[in-house]
Image (cartoon, rainbow, N blue to C red):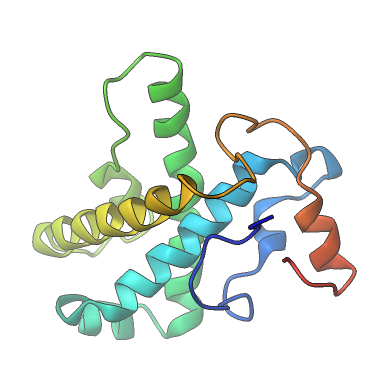
Length: 154
């Protein structure tokens, strides 16, 4: 069973525990969000236009915190799409400006673009992944437990 959709192990910079506080929050939807944050982090670090923005954030850890924050905010967009309230899952510039108050419109637009690339990377892996993070989004995700015990996620 494929358990991790992310291509590299960034678990030392973005922690799975940031996506659950209580036992009942160890659900597949939060695992999906964690993997989105990992993909977003990679895309931000790969983007040449965001290099100065990322360094201005205060380093890799601050970028990681932003990516986790953004991924958690995206859950609302996913839920709205699944409930039929919206036609598409969209990142909102408000998600960025609430966290990064001094960003320019150009920086926010580039982050939205990069967030879309990260989204497409993740969702393209969902086709073959057996974890079923969206269709079984409220089911318990034992991967969080394995990580806490120091075990492998695969």
